[in-house]
Image 1 (cartoon, rainbow, N blue to C red):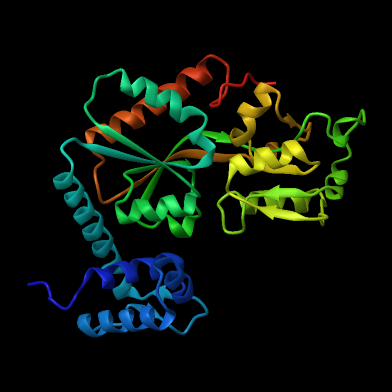
Image 2 (image 1 turned 45 degrees about the vertical axis):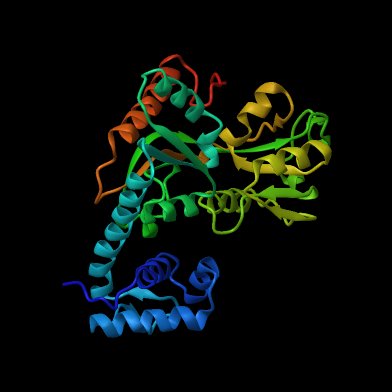
Length: 313
């Protein structure tokens, strides 16, 4: 029988420390103190009788025992959450995690297509940074994540189905000084404030490599944000430049409220697609939403336009 000393807090704490590789970061996320997290981990190890983490390294990594326990702990917690949701709701729920790259582009068209099929289901669309959405996927709070592929070391127990690729873009307000010269000097980007995805986000390393490759920066000021609404408003009222995944700004460029600078960013292409758990089969509703997304992407590319409705240059 399951040892009655094992509590949900033990599993939650173990999963977050494993994901974040840090007691301090896990404590901050869980809203408790670092000593409380350390105590909870030691309690779990004492109950199981094996070491779950290798504490000889700078970051906490699971031991062989921890790797085995991780597969079962994550599955059990996610399954329990699904069971609770199924008892507290009278209709099925499909929770879709949508990173900023798709929440305003292909997903609305896909959900419109899905809604015409008359499937009795409540859709819950969760927006946010990809790292948070992947964590929610592991915990069973979302059933499917649509966005860029996460870093390889965070894909353990997950699978990725690519749909298309996208690049980053550099956008500014109409009338920006960089739009005046007949030939844009890429180095001049360093003369203006910049808005970037925050450190730790999936796309930030790609942005950093692009800036380094073109010897751009340092900037007069930098603002890190995941809020597309804030970035749009700030860029429209200032001379700041916004470096972000193209689909976040594609609609604004199409409407003329922002302008994309003519800079070649083709070397920043990255895959966008579905991330799912390998140990759980998505519900019929989730599979139908996923198929609607595939249909929208396939039709748009077949018609010679990209995933966010833009004709190729």
